[in-house]
Image 1 (cartoon, rainbow, N blue to C red):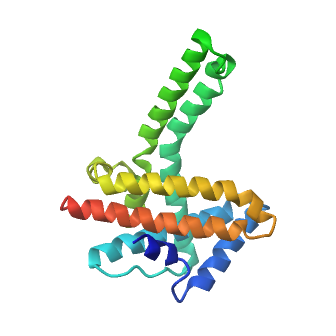
Image 2: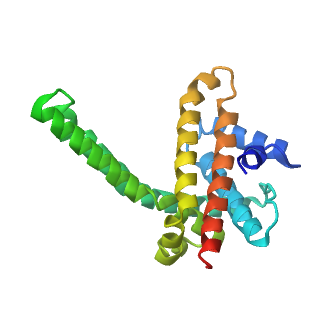
Length: 220
């Protein structure tokens, strides 16, 4: 399954089209920060929808096309709104906690050091707990084509209680972290933008498949 996921963005007829456009939009975002990334988000929404639909039909997911353009931007805006809504509280928690009083304490040893370690650990765990449903919510939004799916507690809850979803979420988070670390050095030879888009497509396909399998296992 991992091999199929890794080959998904580059093993189909639209691979050159998808990679060139996606990488170019990431490059364009250096000068025009918002609009190109909304288009990328719209394409990733199509990847998720294709993956979840293929899973239910017991077929291999096809790499979606970029056209038509107008629905692409609509899907991108919808996906960005859903993701941002889930990110606001945990990111704010980490910024306020680790960038505020706890940062002034620092891991200096003694009681202050214990407070820093305990506080930062609790803040990180709480942030993770708040972020954990986000992939399921984003997949639901892409699959249903509606923002209301982002607050469908039944659909999201069934996904988050699935062990496969947990494993996939952790693995994709690790993959994104590694790609982020390699992004800047690889941009020195102008391939970081390609890597970024490739990883995004793989992660979108992995999460779409994991959530679809969770829904299927729980007979939704």
